[in-house]
Length: 308
Image 1 (cartoon, one colour):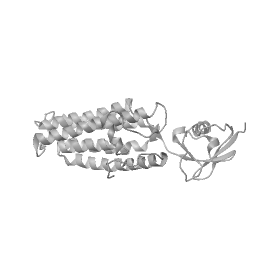
Image 2: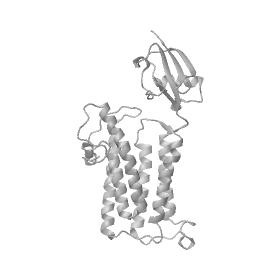
Image 3: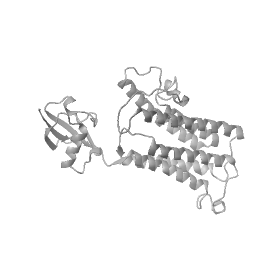
Image 4: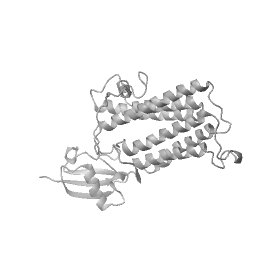
């Protein structure tokens, strides 16, 4: 059996970092990363990006050496992705924060609204309902992170956790400050507006959870297999007939319901920013589906049926 020789160069300086001989033809990029780590332990596999061209795309861990367009002496280019942190840790951190922060304002702990309001309670029912909905949303997210989600990538750059936490924690504090403020004014149309908004919120939360379960069942544990998601017997998954990322559609719907319920500007802005970001993600996933699957359903849009 003919073995390969693999040289790994720095993508920026072209300096030779490592030379591996007698590499098995069936070796994967993940295995090559492990071999590289033995000579450069500061660059553990999750920090490594190996590519065929210095400015090209990163090779996938499951790519096999002999199937790559290289000769028996392969040249790979290395880039350091920086310190990494697991997706699970990131999600738990960014979701636990809003849950805790919102409750600080709800219970009106000292130094927020003034001494005379310390640990007082709002007389408006919608304030208590909003706290229940907000807490439910983030408890659901935490439980899904632990027991439902299967991540295609194990880690992300450590620096992202600061950006993500600033977004989630900051908006949570902003909206909680006004919703739980002693001078908060209930929605204009009273109970009817609150009931309608609560219905939207609950339906979208159930829909979001249903989509997450459907996506989980689509990917076996420990696998990176990608399949086309289709509706199941659960009616909430029928939105797959019209959009590629109904989990984002339901997520945006939940926050629109919460904004209507509380009639709070920071919630509306949070919904708008979230919708903008999720639209970007949805368009990316939609393009990926179209590129990977020739038989991908043509009627689907990324996030909003028939529009976007």
